[in-house]
Structure formats: structure tokens, C-alpha cells
Amino acid sequence: MSKLKLATAFIADQNYESARDILEKEQRNTHNVYFLSLLYRYFNQMRKEQTLVEQAVSLGLSSQYIEERRKYYSLPIFEQLEPRQSLILPKDPARIASAGSLEQLCIVTGGGSDKPYFYLMTQLLESLEACPTYKNVRKGIIDCGLTDEDKNYLLKNFSNVEIKTPNLNFKLPDKVERFTQKGNWGILARPFMDKLFPGYRYYMWLDTDSWVQDERSLDNVLCDAENYKLGVVASHCGRVYAGSFWERWHKTPIVPEYMWQFLHDNPFPLLTASCFCIDAKNTDFFPKWGRYLEDQMEKNGFDWGNDEITFNYTVHKDFQVSRVNSLNYNFDLGGRGLPRLKLDEPDVLYSTLDEEVVGILHLCGMGLHKSYPLWPCLVHPSSFTEEVFQANRQRYQQIVQFCDAHKVMPDQVNAGSNSQITSCHFRVFPWRDKQSIMSALKKEAQICLQSN
Image 1 (cartoon, one colour):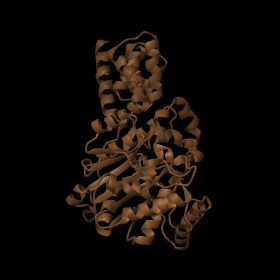
Image 2 (cartoon, one colour; image 1 turned 180 degrees about the horizontal axis):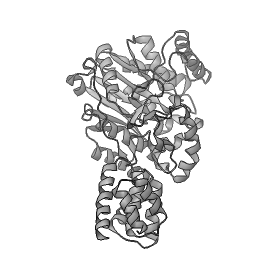
Image 3 (tube, one colour; image 1 turned 180 degrees about the vertical axis):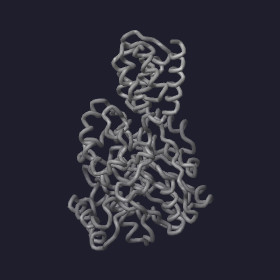
Image 4 (tube, one colour; image 1 turned 90 degrees about the horizontal axis):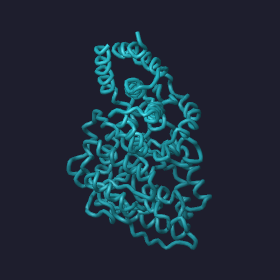
């Protein structure tokens, strides 16, 4: 029996691993390449498949399938990825926002100022469109350096999108150069989103480098704004570290003395400015936040944290926090590490601490690029390369050691797969088409066996 016929018999019996091992040792021809390509895709070994396709082209092998795969791998890495499917989970009837509130809601984010962050914003909008309840909600995008091409793409590919450029006229101390960078405008324009996108009652902010996995997180934040005027989410630092957090920023210093003293001396929970919802019709939250931010900028200039410090000061000084939502609504990779994956739910991200489904994944976080060599390729899909995969493999394996061995996806530590890099993105490599791959393998195997 020829090796190809033996491999075909293994495929017919769904013994794919044995078939792959045989075909890898055989001489390349169109049948061999077709079978082996499908098997590599079945086992999520996308880089091996790319090498195989390149080898087939260099050998002069030609078929419609080889040409399709060659064109696929000639795409930019981000375009090789595909959006996840919607995650639909049971809801608590008491925590579902009314249809009227959804009509009066605008979800706002900031868009700029380089290609990697444009990719991140694209994923955020894709994740919102995968949420059945929120896919038709208005989305406001604060222009922080988008190109005309970027804007046209957003308006063409997403529904109910409006793009506005902020007019920020802060009186600043001398030599505040970082403020002039458009990429920073998304940090500073948040208190003025109701002026940029007027006419709504509820304004929900989501950071550009985040995406929504479970729309129940949006339900809860919006319901809190309905019931308490503010929907807020805990920061990964939490109450325990709030004192040291204020202390750290005070030493920078970017916080006026009166703000620092108030926040430091009171046991307030630290809230994130990466995800929140405000009832702008029945509160003066945005005007107050804007005034505090302007005062802070005039006295101390611009630095990272201006928005979060003044957001916390506004919430705790002028409003009463009735409910703080879970850290899983801002699952910050910089503060909480990587999420957990389960064998029986390979596409669902879980918290590493409480086994809850991650509601909103935040890809950046504080000290991100300094802390982990893995994060830059997690955050910037356009920088994915085989060298990056290999360089980060050991670091990734160290990170996931704390996970239960039975609950971590094997592919997460598989150097032949890209899934260990993209598992935290909304867009992922198309490793889920196993049924179609199996059907193609079965059909071709039957043809080969009948011809022999």
C-alpha cells in the first residue's frame, strides 16, 4: 500500500494525527499538499501550513486550492483574523436595560492615532456588533488622529457611527508637549463627550483597547446609570491599593493638593475610567468632571492618569456610589494577567480569580509594555511575526503555569499555533472551521480511495 493511500485510509477513519505524520515525510505533490494543508489547519498549525504553501509554490505546484491559500497568507496579519461569534448567556430580568434607555444611549470611544490602535478600535466595534442588544446603539468616535481612509472604513463597515474631532482649549503650563499629541486627546476629551455627541441621555465610555465578550456587562453598567445615575466599574487596584495609588500620583506630581488630600484621606474604592456610564440628563457629572480636569491641567499639566484621578475625584466628592461593578467588566491584562480558557469552551475567556466569564477584556493596562514582553504583540496585531511567537513562547508558558492544567487549552502552549498570541483578541485565527475541514478531508479521501 502506498504511503498516500495509507494516509488517505487514516483520514477516512478520522485518525488525522497518523495521516499528518505520514504525509509530512512524503514528497510534495498537489494531493499531498491539499491533505497536509487541511490537516495543519485542523490542528491549528497555521505557520506550518503557511510554510507548506510557500514550499508548494516554489516547487511549481499549482491548483485552485494552493492559489487560495497563497492569497490568504499574502494578506496583512490582521486581515487573516476573523471576528469571534456572539456569546449569548442567560440574563437576569432585573438587570436588563429598557428599550427606551437603549434608544437614548451613545457608546463612545477614542480613535487614533496609529494603525495598531485602529485595529484595536475595529475589534471593539466588531465586538459591539456581536452583542444582539447593542449592535444598533449609536457609537460616537472621538477622532484622535484618524486618517481619511480610517474614517471611511469605519463609516462603511459599522452601523450608527458618528466621528467627531474634539476642540480642547485647556490653559496649560509652559512646555506641555505631550498634550499636543493627538493620540492623547481621547484621555482628555471624555468629560466633554456629551457636547461632542449631543442629544443622548446616557453616555457609556469604553476604552479603545478593550472589547466586549459578554453583553451582560453592558447591561449592568447601563442599569446602574438608570437606577443610580452612575454606572461604575472597579479598577484592578481596588480599595486595598487605592491609598498607594493616590500616593504614587501625588509624587509625580500631577494631582492638585486638594484632590490628593481628599482621595488619600478617605477609604474610597478606586474606579476605572476605562468603562462607565453616566446619566447626563439628570446629573451635572460631565460639567463637574470637565472643570476638575481643566483645573488639574492648568495647575499641573498633562500626564497619564489625569482622567482617572479627576474621574474618581468627581464621583467620590460630588456623587454617591451605590454600586460598583466587578473587575471582570474591565479585565485588565496589565493588572490581572491572562484569562483562563476551558477545554469544553475554547472560545470563552474566564477570570483567573473567580471563574466568572470575562465581560469586557482590556488589552493594555498600567505599565504594560514595561512589564511583559508578550504584551506588545497582544496589543498590536500588525506586529505579529514568527519571531515574536517564538520569543514569547517561553514567557507565555511561565504565565499560564498558575492555571489548572486541565482547564488550559493545549493550543495555548503550542509553538506551532498562533492561538497563544491571539486568544485575548476579539479577532482570532480561523481555527474553528473543523467541521468544514473534516468534510473536505472526507470527500477527498473518498475520491482518492475510489480512484485506487
